[in-house]
Length: 288
Image 1: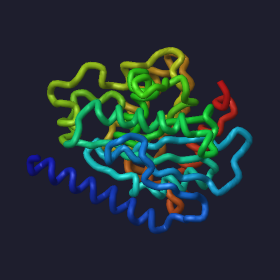
Image 2 (image 1 turned 135 degrees about the horizontal axis):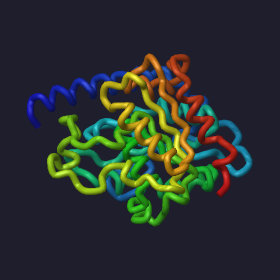
Image 3 (image 1 turned 180 degrees about the vertical axis):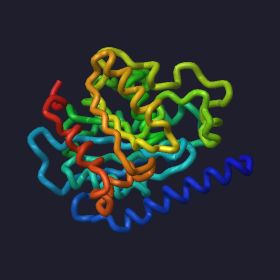
């Protein structure tokens, strides 16, 4: 790892990890029951944490969200996202926050294989956990939103895990990279075999009529993932083939605050949690 890449990765890690540590300290614990370190596969990083709401489940069960964090596929831990698990549980959503293998242990597409196994676990176990198996969503922020997009749009990954995108009710992408070649981010370059990028690695390539409904959110001034090219560009492509898209572009926030705003202490900043919750509870997404 060269000096430039080490410094860039360290700066980003300190920003996000420090933010998460502070948010987790302020996170209420009365809104959820936590089951931690659940294996969805046989490898050490193939684990997830389950946040079950303490509120009574509705008829049919809670909506279910399987969440993947960002970090340029280089770093991250489910423990850093207690604030997000609590946020969803506080609104009556069963949340599964999953780890997945990272670079340099793996490169593309191994983390998509892990993500597919985690979502397959959520689909398989939803009813047992009190969730509604017909209202399961995959969600991610940044690199995690890429994972979510690929699982929702490219059927290869869930099919290999014994499931199908058709089993999902929809997906949620926050500040995701969906059209990002050539890669300028030095942290992400080796993940995608730069400069020999694998064919078929971009979510926008799998836009098709009949794709899953989606909530796409981003910060207008995002300096890490270009909002116009990625979020707005994917929304336009999906709408062009009549895929239902809920698009929210938030003002006066950045890439990190987009997801951090779901924490209890920051919900006043922008209504990301309200908007995501409204999407996963939409009546027209309940039964297919």
